[in-house]
Image (cartoon, rainbow, N blue to C red):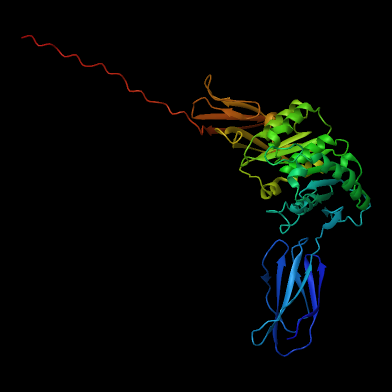
Length: 442
């Protein structure tokens, strides 16, 4: 049986071109092509192609290696064994790179090749999760789509993003403190590798700025606590930190103790968490940072995402905020203010805390929780009834409902909140005196 010969795969933008040679054979009915991505076990089938076909452009997810198997189907229904070839489609904005065995994905904005400027640069951890769903653990962050949209809308200037792949030692490399359950604590060595080796390599090969004012570091989960630690350890290297859902619980909250011991650093900090996550360490970190002198809304930003869980899908929805903080326009005025009521778990035990979360949206596209920069009060409350602290934590005292008023600048919002843990009142039966009976004289 005749086989496919000289099968070649040529990468194109969002496509792969397959070409082959084949001697004419009247027994060939048609040609079938199967594909398989790097992280899949099974092939999928394309539609059959005419037997005269010698080249075809196939759509493919950019950056993700794909393997193709080309087979001949004969008139009697039999098949050739097929020929196999692999390739990777190009991404419009992202280049694949590698340095000392560590894979890198580098986002370059439109116009990079023609413009004679050095761009601000963001170093992001878990690089395989940033640009391609096929490469990611669960879902991609869609960093390229988000940046292209923000740049087109004029909400931020052009930047370069360097996505640094994690390794099989992710837990060890990303945690600054050893945890009694899984070990770790090698963030110092990994951070030094990024600062001393990867950053000079990027600055030599790509048109990126060499000023600390134009460098940021960002990550989520373990990458979030690593980014915060790197910002504190290398304030002369980075001017901004994006700590997205940081795993501050590592080593029983050792990072909080570190923040308490360290003086204020000249860096901007974005920090967030979803209410579907399991602890309130992040709120405690924000309180500590404010006590250290970080100006809320200028140097420190916190967002409490209602209902969001600890995964890439949630992080992709809010990654634009730290991007805007890094190289977006300065916020001038509030364009919207909404009140949310969140239930934040306390160390995964006991009842949830009831938190009034005012979220402000600004004219530069940024939004974040107002936290303690808003003024809270409870209206119409009796003495010793419901009360609210300066960060929006509402404390009931047995009553079933409270009306909370939030003020920020010249904006006033109010919301009525039902107590999710009302105290049931015990009804006491009234005491009835026994009826006195008259004595009958006999």
